[in-house]
Length: 105
Length: 105
Image 1 (cartoon, each protein chain N blue to C red):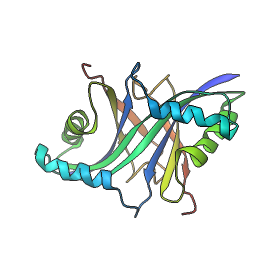
Image 2: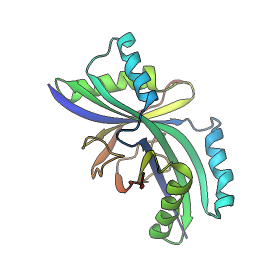
Image 3: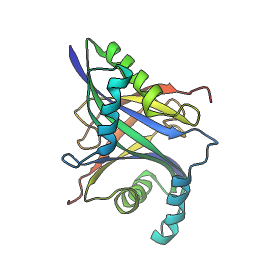
């Protein structure tokens, strides 16, 4: 058994409305910030998986991402392997996006 | 002027309650999935910045992340440079987490 930490990045598919992204863009003027465009707001789920090897762990994460963490009609996901215990709350030097879920939407 | 694409990953700080993470963990049993723990649910914001160089673009993203995209009392953020137009909706082979915001919480 080994322990693996992953992140699942979920974002609205191209062409799908993203009201949160529009809200961020609308706030930029109040902050006096220019030059920012194409804002997309999604979710990032980090989790730890105990499995026999990394392949088995990734299979679990793939299933979770497709069945629980994303809505395949309107969202795409990407699975990322995180070296440390947590990428956002600690410095992680190597990450790799290795899987992208397109859904059938 | 050059164009740069970034992602800002925002996650609840260690020790801060994460009800969405608990909800995901609670759903694992219904899916018959075991071995998953330490689920943390955060946001991921992808955006494009036009600036004179990458340093200037990163300065803009740092300010956005600290002032608009995260709540420094309860959330930490990490800024990631994305090679392609979008990491979640296209395959991106190189990402690097280079900045972690700890806040003063």
